[in-house]
Image (spheres, rainbow, N blue to C red):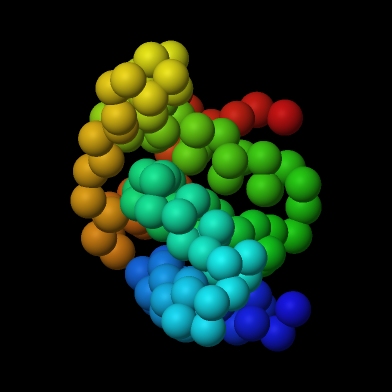
Length: 128
């Protein structure tokens, strides 16, 4: 588990993707086609860079939430933003077409753009 913790414990999604990709390349060089990093690198390459960045930040922020209500409010804000994001529409279209129309992902968000995902959206705050 040390390799997995080392790769996924990095502070930035770009670094995580690089580390997993490097692990996959090293495994292929060794002839180890079953190494966890090969499948992980393939899966990371298929998904929205925005989703990866937002999810990584949610995990970081969620660890600091002191209550379930605080965590649920954060998730609600993020969900509100995802519903309006082009990657959501593209991803749903790709799933519904069973891959006939591959998803067209946008670039990963900048630091400021990422922070905006955690601000209250037009729908307001979740009332619990």
